[in-house]
Structure formats: C-alpha cells, structure tokens
Amino acid sequence: MKKFSYLLLLLPALFYLNSCTKETIEKPDDEIKIFPPAKPGFMVVSYFPSYRSVGEYPDKMFRMADVVNYAFADITAAKTVSIIDTKKFDSVYRKAKANGAMVFLAIAGSSDLFASMSNTSDGRTIFVRDVMQKVRQYKLDGIDMDWEYPRSSDGTKESFRLLMKQLSDSLHVDGKYYLTAAITPGIYAGSVRDGISNEVFGYTDWLNVMIYDDFTTLPSNLYQQHSPYSMAVTSMNYWINTRGMPKDKCLLGIPAYGRPSGMTQSGTTMAYKSILAQGGDPMSDSALVSAAGYSNYKIYYNGIPTVKKKAMYAKNAGGGIMFWEFGQDANDNRSLLKAACDTLGIRYD
Image: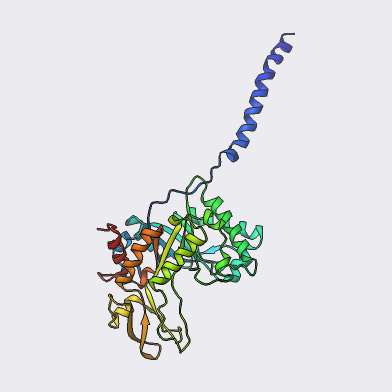
C-alpha cells in the first residue's frame, strides 16, 4: 500500500519532468531570433580583387573603408563556393582587420551557374550551407552577392528572391552576419532592372548600386561619360523614390577606372591610377591616353571634384558609397577614396 502511495506521489513529478524534456527539445527552435546586425551609419565600401597587390596600398587607405569586399569567391558547378587564392584572401583579411575594416566575401560567377544553383530548393540549400561554413571558417563579417544579373524574363528574379531570403534567414540569426548585394543602376527599363524584387530590400542590409558602365561603342558617339554625376542622381532617385528602397540601404557606386566612348572597350578601359600615369589630371574627368594599339583617344573617368560631389550627394540622399575597386585607385594624395573621405569628414589618421 505504501509503495502504491509513493507511486501516486511520483506521478505528478514524472509528468512535470516529461513536460520539461519536451520543452527543452523544442526550445532551441523557439528561441532562434532572425534580425539584421546594426548598420554602423553611413558606409564606405570598397572591393579588393584577388589579382591586386595588397602591399601597394598603405594602411591608412584600409582605414578609410568600413568594409572591404574581397572579390571574388566563385560559385561552382557543385553549387558551392570556392576561394581560388586563399593566401591572397588571408593577406587582404589581415590588413583590413588590422585597420578596423570589416571583411565581406563577394561571390560572383556566371549567370548560368547562379541560375542552376538557385532554381531548386535543394540547390539553394547546398549553396547556403556552404556559404555559412565559409563565413565561420574564415571569420567573415558578411557576404556580398554579385549575380549579374537575375532577370524578370526567365524566372531568375524569383530564384534570386528565394536565394536572398534563405541567405538572410541564415546570416541574420542573432544578428551576427551582414548580407549585401551588388545591383544594376536601374537607369534603363527592362528585364535586368526588373529582376530585383522589392522584397530583396528587406532581406539585405544594404545594396551596392553599380552606377557606372553607361557606355556606347557607336562611332557616332565619342563623348559619352560612362558614370556622370547625373547618372548617380537618376539611379538613386529610381531605387529610393520610385522603387521604395530605404535610403540608408542605398549605396552609391563610384568607378575608379575610365572608359572611352564610341569605340571598342576591349583593352581600352583603364584604371584611374593608369590614367594618371599617362598624364591624366586628377581634377578632370577626361584625358587622352594610349592603349591596345589605339593612340591618343579620349577616356572618361571620375576625377576628384566629381567624386567629392557624388560623396556629398550620397550623404544627403543615401546610405553610403561604394568603390569598384581598391586596386585601381591611386595610393597617394590623388586617391579617389581619400577625396571622398575628406569630403565626408571621415578620419583615417
């Protein structure tokens, strides 16, 4: 009889312990919080390609950037991510971190590979899991997606949206990692411009708007600047005012290179520092240069006054600026990155 009484007394306790066990099993899922990391105000972002020399650029130039996007990791046929030169990545990473910059991994590849990876749930999951493994392995601060370009005409608009949603859900657990993307300037109507759905604005922490490369090869047009100030205004106005992108997420992209107009672009484009080496004026937006067998043709670029004007416009109208790319800039007082930081009052001493 006593044993039976003891059992009756134990039943509530066993029931309680069983309930606690169930709650313990379910609790991790219930406690997962997905939210973006805090955006540290106005952003200065610059890409650093794997083929550039890290030692060519002094520490203070790395201090000018809030984020260094290492370009690029490649998407593979296996739907994973590959960093080709891990030694170069490590050298960029160490120098950026030593000077207070965050490091993101920029992921690029052919549009076909992006489409193949993202058009199924299994493909996206394989990719996202590998991205998260790389983020932890290399102690990254975030990921930048460089798909050029998803389109509204072939179904990749929805694939891109689903991919960015899944990346956001993974990277933003506990607000730990950032997610950004490089996107079209959106100055021309069409499938590329419409390939970015408004939902992507919510999934990302900011968008690097590539406001450059508006060129022509038609011989009848020898005078088209590929990245004028007016293009920056048109692009920012479209994404923010027409499409509703939050202004603090819209980063104005600035080129550190030049393009000719009315002729081939093969071998005739040129880094800003190379234009200066051929006598170009950092205070101008055009110069006469020679390259690829062409002599004394006019090349158009953004000099210091235009960069300063764009930087101030971005401060008033958007959430930051982005440079493509670090290794094309001058590494002295003629630096475009320096000109922007000086205009914005950003300290880098």
